[in-house]
Structure formats: structure tokens, C-alpha cells
Length: 320
Image (cartoon, rainbow, N blue to C red):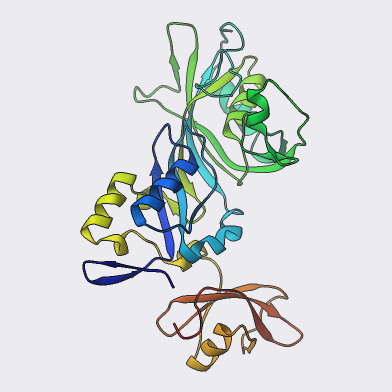
């Protein structure tokens, strides 16, 4: 178990940090910064954010990296500002304009009706300017070389999509150059590109668009209320307050059924052995296992035929 001594106290370095990613940083930049602040190498992230985007970036520290497979399946929420009138090659404000401004007259009712069409499951084609890999190459690397290749559509799900009013109370904000800004919120499955969504909405409105702002407000079980800045993290490290911002492993899977184990069963699980349980689950159902101190020590899968739990991931070594 990785621990850090701070002000005479030992802090377990396994858990999650929710970082409010600043604009201009890549997700990898944030990981590198966290590694430097904490002084450890085993740090990762789940759910890449574009450099121009801000908001919730889930950072996995220590053994929390082994929970990435569960976090990747979670839904995410965003607040975005799209500019109707012209598109860019990247789909956001960092790109090059692709055409002259095309004015469009759209009513709030039109906008809401079009957005409603995107709620539910649909196919979405990943943009060329993305970190998605095809045959080992990141798409954005090819895009920077002027190469565009065919991309297979992926299935995405949007559960919420609606415009929200600007500070002046209006749905639309008009700019002098003839463009129109629309602020909207969206909740969607992981892997959904909000830049592509904005372009598709604009297409149905008879115009084109790009994103000016994008802020992730939640990712799975985590949201902005839990987020801290990199500067705050460095300050907490200096003051010995990491224990107040490093979230425990079990916070990643709040809806997974849990079992508190006896000392005997805890020992068996820590050695990778199966245990018999009285509770009944569906075949293959995953269960989080806690020890007497309520630490999540493992995730196990249920075997209906044997009525046993088989550990899949063990987070604590025997003897710890």
C-alpha cells in the first residue's frame, strides 16, 4: 500500500482526486502535475477532456487506477456554449474557420424541438481532431498532417439535452459579426463528443456551429462540488490535508452492492480465494467487499452454481 507521510501522519495514497481542469491543459498535463505534487508515479485519469475544456477530471491515484474499467462506463454531464454561424476544423474555438458566417433565424421553440431529436440512442462519428486511436494512431495526429480517414460511427446515448438562459434571461445571445450563441446542458454516455453534437444540432437548424466553451459538470459518481484546483491540491499537500481531498476507492462504485466481510473471509479474499456467501446474486454480478474497517478490499463476481464470490480485483495485499 502506497502511503505518504505528512506532518507525522501516514496518508494512504489510494483513491480519487476530482480536479477542476483549467483551460489550456491537456488531461495528460493534469496527470503530470498531480504526479509532481504528490511525488508518486501511479496516477491516471479517466475520460479525456479537450485542452480548451474545463471542469471535472477524475484522477486515479495508486490502486484506484484498477477501477478505470468501471468509471469508463459512467455517464457524464456538461454545460456548453455553441456559436451558430460557422464551423471550424476542430469543432471548437481553437480551430480555423471553415466558411463565412451564415446567419440563421431560429426561434427558441425551433431550438428545443431540434435538440429533442437527439435525446436517446444514436450513432455518432468521432471527429478527426480527437484522441481516438485507429490502427494505433491518434486521429488528431493524422488531422494535423491534413489526412482524413474513414471513422466508424459509435453508439452514444443522450439522456438530457436542453438550452439554458444566458445571464440576461434570453435563450439566444447575438454577436455583432452575425453569429448567435446558445448555452446548453447535456447528460450523455461516455465517449460522446459534444463538439460533434453541436455541429449536428446546427446542421438540423440550417446552419453550422462550433463550441466556444465546454465545462464538464459531472463524471459518473463525481461532480464539481467535489472538485479542487491544482493550486488547492498543492496547498493541501503542503498543509497536510490530503486526507480531506483524496476520496476513498468505494466512492467510484456507489451503486454496487456491498458486503462487509468477517476477518476469516477477509483473509481468504486477500489471498485470492473464493468465499461462500448466504446472499444470492445474478450470475456474474459484481459485488464490492469491505473489511471490518469498511475499507473496500476487493471487487468479486458471483458464481451461481457454487454460491461463491470469486475476487476479480484485490486492492489490499495480505498482511496490510
